[in-house]
Length: 631
Image 1 (cartoon, rainbow, N blue to C red):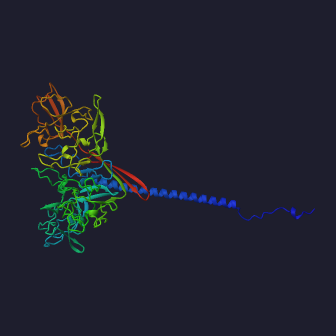
Image 2: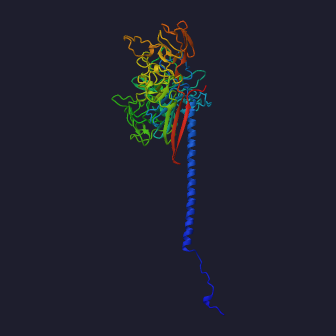
Image 3: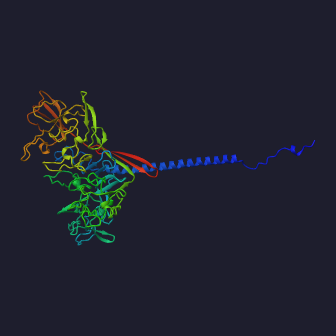
């Protein structure tokens, strides 16, 4: 039988994909591309994050090296603030390791944007860091004011240009000593370093710390008030001291107008008192009047635009190199005029006087009055950014160790701790640096007329013999009795004589030694105070430092032996002025031992918080820095 055409097998005529198959394949391709894009994005983000972490680590290492390197060369190795009149002959602590100063100002205790730490360093201090490289800064070749002698450094070597031991002009000076300051302004961390003049000895003789020609003429004294420097284009008359010299200096007092510049030398690290006692403005950096950034006439630190104003820390290189800053060679001027900078009918031209207000330009971060522009919107002089350490810094918090609190806190805090005495009684007690433990005569010694938030190692010769000035804080193990019968201010939660000691948990402090008194083992006393007649005035019932015998309160005396009635004698025994000495009184019934009553500031904690724009990440760096040498 023959099949018909309709009975033939069917053949497929399909030659491509269907629409559904195309949509599925496109969806799969898009899905794979999305996955690849996500993976690539994640990988890129991871790389960016890792780069940010790497940048943070690099910045943290650099900051750690820089800050710890400076602190390892600090000159004040045992930060015990000097008490009024302290001297090498009466102090139990050597002055050799208490050179220069340590100054900490925290201002608002709740802010990490207005803290400042400033201290002196020496490359000869090798206890922690064996790098003895000197410190370097800018210097210029000076011309003889009279023009009578050669500008050659071999002929006139007593000038900062030769301090680096090179007789070739290189615009560089050096010294083993300097002042260093750290602070944050406008999101930038700054480190301002100023050298202490250390001229090299020539032919076996020491040169004067004030630069002089071979004929003994001061380079900075001239009839015009300018000094002359050599530049590539020839001699230039200038009064912009901090444009040409990275050296600590103050203004001389030539009549009513301050000037010319007087260099602060390496010898100013010595805080020993002269005999007889010198006047208020002492040739030592322990004296705030001589420090960089402090008003030399009041001794106050300039840290704000005005009292209660914005924090500026220290004047930047951008500001001190402005053409109208001038200080300390001459008075500062209003930009573009011959008008002296300052307020009132007789402005003093002193930019370090906080009574002369300035304005901080938030957009530039530069003080408008020294921005090198009449509009106040300039970015400063020729040396801008030279003191910049790190940008995008959101915080620099400085805290000090409080032994009583057993924690880091700010000086002048109001924190308390609880302690049970040996009998189980509970007490609420203030820390070592509580505001109630400040000394009454130290109230007005801070940057804004208050010592709250300030730690300062101070100088022993400030004030007068009758009215000496006390540092804001001295941490005592046993606090002296309360004002008006002692130097401690009122307002402590518990009086010093009732305060249990943290170690013994006993109220051992018996105040001043009294005659005919029964003392028990462990009782602690101080050298007696006698309210004496002061000039023509009768005794006033108010403690004065010259009314108590040496050693004031740096030494206390603990009863370590008693027998019989154990009653003190009718007159004071001979109290030793050094710790670790034993002595007896009243027929050997009482035995006492002298002990060092002071606590040094053992360490500080610096917390820096900075930001990396590339990775949009933030980093916290905490540095715990010891301030006493390890034993």
